[in-house]
Image (cartoon, rainbow, N blue to C red; front, side, top):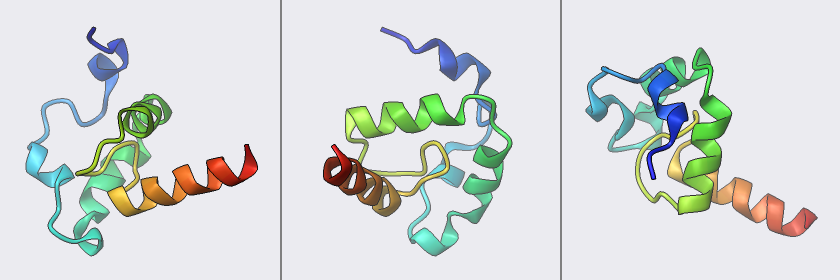
Length: 76
């Protein structure tokens, strides 16, 4: 099933390599795009639910997404 939010993503048409930095410190360019994206939250929720391991999704790196998941488990 294709997520309709992807059609409205600010990253559509941008080189995917931008969203797969080698180090978290190199994620700023991707985060800038995510910062103005109208579907940022839907993208982040997709990544959290699908346990995406790589890349920047919804403005969060893989390390940041792991932190979000841990925080949600603690508050559940």
